[in-house]
Amino acid sequence: MKAIVNGKIIVGNEILENKVLLFEKKIIDILDRNNVCLSKNDYIIDAKGLYISPGFIDVHIHGSGGKDAMDGKIESIKVISNTIAKRGVTSFLPTTMTMAKEHIYKALDVIEQAMNMDLGGAKVLGAHLEGPFINPKYKGAQKVDFIKNPSFDFIKGYENVIKIITLAPEKDENFKFLKYIKENTDIVLSIGHSDATYEQAIAAIDNGISRATHIFNAMTPLNHRKPGIIGAIMNTDISCELIADNIHVHKGAINVLTKIKGKDKIILITDSMRAGCMNNGIWELGGQKVIVKNGSARLEDNTLAGSILTLDNAIKNMKNNIDASLCEIISMVTINPAKDINIYDKKGSIEKGKDSDIVIFDKDINIRMTIVEGNIVYQK
Image (tube, rainbow, N blue to C red; front, top):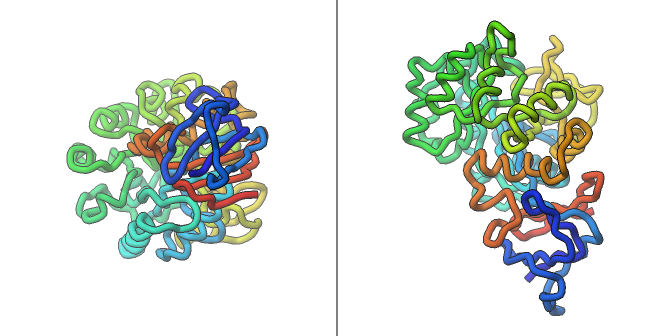
C-alpha cells in the first residue's frame, strides 16, 4: 500500500489537513492521521505541507515537447505524455487538426493504440477531433484546403476513440450529424471554429451541442444586435473551454465569463502546439509555419496558432485573474473536464475507488510530484 502524509488534500471545495491518503492503482481511502497504522512495508510519501490535488486533465492539446498528435507516431504521443506530466497533467485528449483524411486517420490509429499503453506519463483517454468539420471563415490556424461538412462516414470506425468533436453546426444540414452522433455514440459535441448566428447556435445546443471549444476564439462575437455564439453560450448551461494564457482572452472577458457561466462550467485547456515547454523559434502546426516568441505562437499572418500554455500556468493565471478559491480553480482542470467527457466516475477527484491520479504542488502551483494510476511518473 502507498500513503501520502502531511499534505493538504483538495477534495471538492474542501482542503483536508491531518489526513492520510491511502492508494494503490485506485484510491483506497482518506483517513484521520491518528487512525492509520502504517507499516515498514508501506510506501510513504511525505507531502511536507504541500497541496495534494486530483491530477489535471487536458481535453484539448495538440502537442508539447517538440511533438504533435498529427505526427502519427507513438513516440510523439509518449513525448507529449511525459512532458505534460511534469506540469501536473495525468490524462489528456491528443487533438487533431484539419489535414488530409489519411493524416487524420493515422493520428487516430496511433491515439487508439496509445489508449491501451503505459506511456510513462499522462494517460491518453481518447482523441479530440478539431476539424475538418469547421467553417472557413473562422478556420483560425486550420488549413482551409481540407475543410469538410460534418459526415458520419468520415469518422466511422473511430467512435470509441473520439471523445470530443469540434464543429461548425451551421454546416450540418438540418443537424443530421448532431442528432446521429448524440443518439448513437458517446461522443461529446462542441461548437467551435464557427460562423453560426445566435439562433443557429441555440438550435444546435437544442440538438446535441453540450460545450464550446476555446470560448471567444474562432467564433461569432457578442454584439447587442447579433448576439452570436458567445450570446448563446452565455444564455445556456453548456460548458466552455478557456485558454487562460492572457493572450487568447483578456482577463476582463474571463471575469465576465466566470460571473455569467459560473466556475463549474469553465474547463481550462492549453490548446498547446508542439512548441509547448520548448524554446522560442520557428515551429510547425498542421503543415504551417509557426513563429513562437513573447509567450505566443502565431502564423506568419499573425493569426494565433494554438498556444504554448501549460495547465499549471493556466491555474496560476486564473488565480491572478478572477476572484475564486484555489479549490474552485483546481476544479476547472479536474472535476469539470472529467464531467465534460463523462469520466467523473473514474477520474477528476480524490475519492475512494477512483483512479489514483494525483498531483502534489506548492502554494505557487509548482509541481513537485505527479502520480498516474498509482505510479509516480514525475517528482522534483
